[in-house]
Image (cartoon, rainbow, N blue to C red; front, side):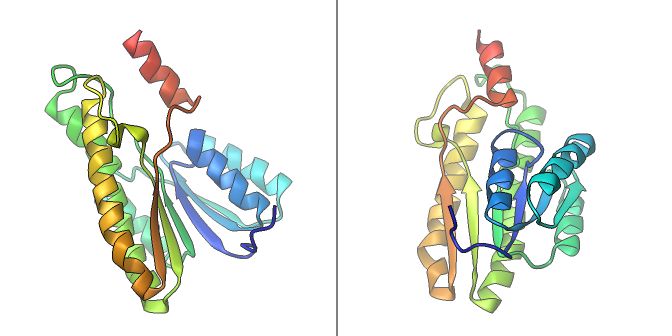
Amino acid sequence: MDLKLAGRTVLVTGASKGIGLGIAQWFAREGCHLRLAARSKDLLEREAVSIRKSSSVDVQVFALDLSQEAARKRLTEACPEVDILINNAGDIPAGSLDDVDDAAWRAGWDLKVFGYIGLTRFYLSKMKARRSGVIINIIGAAGERPMPVYLAGSMGNASLMAFTLALGAVSPEQGVRVLGVNPGPVLTDRVVKISRKRA
């Protein structure tokens, strides 16, 4: 498939495995240059080598904990201009109101909710200035169908849905699209981990 994206630069967070890695591989096949961010340096570098072998694109990796504002700042300084931002990094813990304590809840939201907000704030401003760009937030179906056994994630996803809808309603006026995707269960390490906990 050729979607005429060759030569574009795409930043994917949470790109070392699962959905993020699959997205990165797809964009590489379309001829896009990649900026990949995740916490695991070893996994990122291994996957970057594989992508470089299969696609003639530029791949740069950034091993960062994007729950930290300082890490997000380092990423935006290293990659100030991207054509497409894929917000995907997230690890909100599963569990009921009694299962997830305040510290775990906040840590999960710092990475996914506030991580998405922080990177969107930076890149949306850049994209508006040049009147070109796309931001895609990988959110999750629990925002549409809240679950008591995934309460922190359901609430975080619902807030990101509202965030995306609000921005996406007006961003086309500045030449930018802000979109959200709510995938259902995908066979990733994270889904396996959550399923085992529930079992």
